[in-house]
Image (cartoon, rainbow, N blue to C red):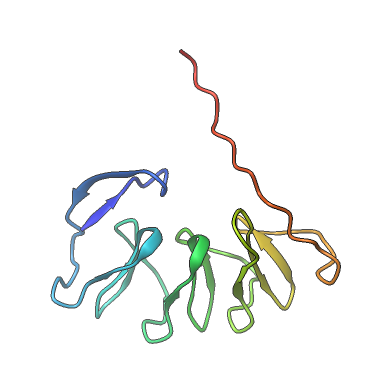
Length: 130
């Protein structure tokens, strides 16, 4: 079952049956990822070309297999799955890295990896019209 809003992975919605899933082997992971014996899913949709045996969900919306790195279900072009890891730098510090550099919210930052100080990231709610 899929209980996440497709357009905003942070907002749960109603439960919907995922078509074609093998219920007896299905596992639900955090951040709207799931897997059965046949496929990996993000928010109810099949992710293509995923290696089932090496697929792993990571913190902050990331996942990887031996071939690619994903951020909320989308492949990160150029990210290196062998060296990719999320970083535990404390509350409000949502970073990851690979041999190329440092990532934040799925984007490779243009910073010096050796001198970067991992500032706290403040996510402010968007204003809504009343």
